[in-house]
Image (cartoon, rainbow, N blue to C red; front, side, top):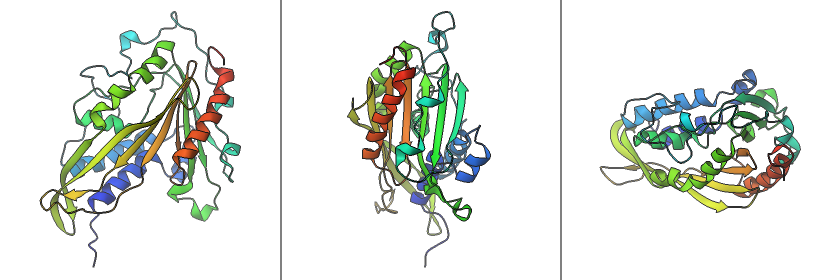
Length: 294
């Protein structure tokens, strides 16, 4: 008979699901204030308990050394150095791009938002006492597209079909995001996360290996990269035995057209092939609003 205590893998999967896809009901309730940062804070709390480490603020930490994708305050563009306009809604992916029935897309516009590539990647760097500041945009616009479902199914986590953020940035920031990608990912290409956790009513020392890899480049826009995040099987450090099954990799596309940078994700049922297709569509749509235009 199975114990009611969550396994290490379940804790990790629960945390990963929270980071990637806030619940649809919460998304609807906060259509103008998407809840990914709140979900991240809750997710990191789970990680902190599982690992036995102290929880630090989920948003930012004082940088030890500016990473390639970060923009120190002194280097960030000023109004006199660069003129920018807001990101128009027309550049965003639309329900018709997904070829399935969807609900009303949820959109949000922002000013001076961070270019958030992957919040769990930020936590990986923070865990290693590395810089955790993303580069900053001037303007941004985001969309979350949900599957059309009856109200009774509102809480199903697979309801999210796609999420996209589009940021307008200074030219040097756009170049730095892509030129420094390899160095940004280097400390997390094989990240061993370990600590005590509950397993079948006992406290055991467990470890899981996570990895971020660039698996494709230059398939859309001026610059593009497909990032794949994988979580290996958790194992008992004392016995060497596995503690559960593998979880599905989580992938996203980072795309640039002119001074616009976009981060695109698909839902649990989506594939990397779907991501590549959406990236091509997104690049074409961003052309009319980019500086310079395509």
